[in-house]
Amino acid sequence: MFRISTKGRYGTRLMLNLALHYQKGLTARSLKDVAEEEGISIRYLEQIIIPLRVHHLVKSVRGAGGGYTLTRPPASIKLSEVLQAVEGNCCLVECLEDKNFCERIPYCATYEVWKEGTRIMKEYFDSITLQDLVRIAEKKSKRKPRAQKNQ
Image: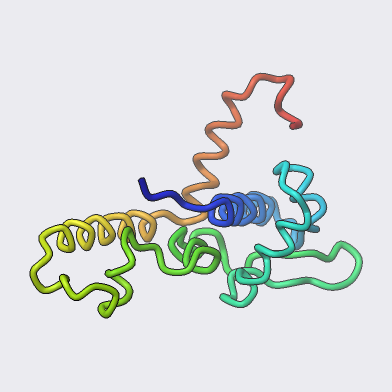
């Protein structure tokens, strides 16, 4: 089954963390704070932040209280952009990206199935913004038992 890698999952959590704090008016977050809150290695976050910067989804803020912040409001950043930045192209099979990968494409019935499945997946991730994830996170945080709230 197709799976989003750890990079994709952690990159999404990093962006959601920044979005949650963006909503509260906090200008920047240190990767150390995000790592502690998310339970992710700071070294791994340092690798993930690079493609997010290259794709202009986050920017660094220098000085006291510096760190990273979103380049745009959460409502204008799509989950598909985050995944594209950290995962690259999301396709169910390699022949969808590279037409020379397989000579069977012109008469392959399964190619059409993989193509449509990929289209649906991309359309779905394109329909979700960081703001949508913020709303989901806020709803779910209300369900968390008290002892776990600060974890």
